[in-house]
Image (cartoon, rainbow, N blue to C red; front, side, top):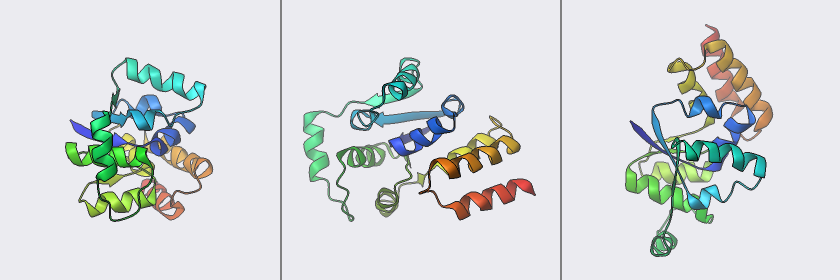
Length: 166
């Protein structure tokens, strides 16, 4: 089973396109830290995520005060200021896990530590590859993602859509 540590950006993308249930069907151990969970501020979103926590599909790792001190002292090449981002980078390194993020700076930092880093586009591709959604739905989801998150690389989305059209 693949261990995946994620930030809120990917979770919010999947929430926005209505595909959280499908995401949690992937054969992955999906982990967030309590600091990341605390970034989910809207009550409607919290209710949805709590359902996946209760079912064991989303695991929250509690960061102790001792660990917080280690994380703060953890040296990064880039200036990663967000404590939530630092906690998932630190945990992904500890667990030798895949890191899911759409944050460019966090992605570069994680790649500098030789972590596998993926994002929302890859998750949609995995849903298609694993047969959870078909290519037609995958194309629609990627088109929908372009309208929900304007920070995603449109050229990569269009490339994947084109690949599925062949």
